[in-house]
Structure formats: structure tokens, C-alpha cells
Image (cartoon, rainbow, N blue to C red; front, side, top):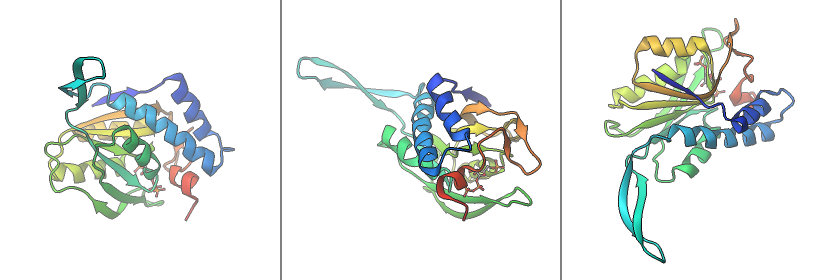
Length: 207
Ligand code: PRP
């Protein structure tokens, strides 16, 4: 499993804003939006292109577009805060949705909605979720995608815990992870340390 850590100075600065407990919801959402642009930019660095001849006002030249725009799949709720920015960078992308809530006692994901295309055999998929903690939510989501034929999945996360990465590695999924940081560990409550708290609550409030 390939893991790309995006440690650009601007990404580290935005992630620090998100980590800071004094950052309010509006500023947290803004920092996540900006971080998402950087993550998607790096996640598409090696995307294949189609070449087509175009006319500038001056001459003919080669133009380029993505050969296979990815399906974007935000994991609700927290992943919603990455969806619009990812879509702005890849406007030709389709978007699917998966809704999961992690049970606070068992730490297992409880699914409550999914809206995905029937077949994903031809399509790269970018799963958007700010946090990869135990990895249970990501593994559940990837297995849903694999049931529809996906073979090329990228998890785009602000933060990842080593425990979650290990779990995904051992699950041997067709997965690449793009994240800004691999943090130290999970605590007894399943929170990433040092982490940033709960990305859903920090964006939308605890409901
Ligand atoms: C958080 C986070 C991930 C998941 C990570 O969501 O956004 O989806 O937990 O934990 P895991 O790797 O241990 O599965 P949460 O379930 O709190 O829901 P929310 O997005 O609605 O806040």
C-alpha cells in the first residue's frame, strides 16, 4: 500500500490551524477546504492525461485533460467538508456518498446511507474523509467500492493514525493513502493523538 505524506509548509500550517483547539468552526472549515486543495493536487499528480489538439489565439498546440476523472466519495459527515473543494479542482468528476457513524463504544462504523454508481470497474475512486483512526470506516467504504468493481482507490485524509494504516495494509486492499500527517497513535477512546478532535463535530457541532 502506497502512503504519500503531503508535508508542504502550507499544508502543515493549515493542519496546525485545524489541530488548534482555539480554532472555531468557521475557521476549521476554511482550513480544511484549503488543505483539501493541496491533498487533491498531490493525489492527482500522476493522473494520466488525454492529449488533444487545441487552437490558442496564436497557434495550434497540444492540450490536455484527465483521461479518467475519479469518482469522488465523501464519507459523511466529516468528508462533506472536503467535497466542494475536491469538485472545484476536478469539475468533471462524478460524486458518490457514503454515510457512516462510528459507534463510540465499539468504534465500529454504522452505515446509514450510500449512493454510489452501479459499476466502478473503469473508474479511479477518491474517498474523502479528514480522519483515518482505527481504519474501520475506510475499510468498510473500500469494501463497498470493491463490491462494485473498484480496483483503484485513493483515501484522501488530513490525518492518519499508524494503527489505521496498519489495518488497511494487512487487509490488502487496492488502496493508496494521501494524507498530511501520520500522527503518533490512538488513545483508549479511539481518538488520534495529537490529532484534532472529531472533525465532524468541529465542522458542524456535536449532534
Ligand atoms: C469520524 C471520521 C471518520 C471516522 C474515523 O467520523 O470522520 O469517518 O470517524 O474513525 P475510524 O478510522 O476509527 O473508523 P464519525 O464516525 O465521528 O462521524 P462524523 O463524520 O459524522 O462526525
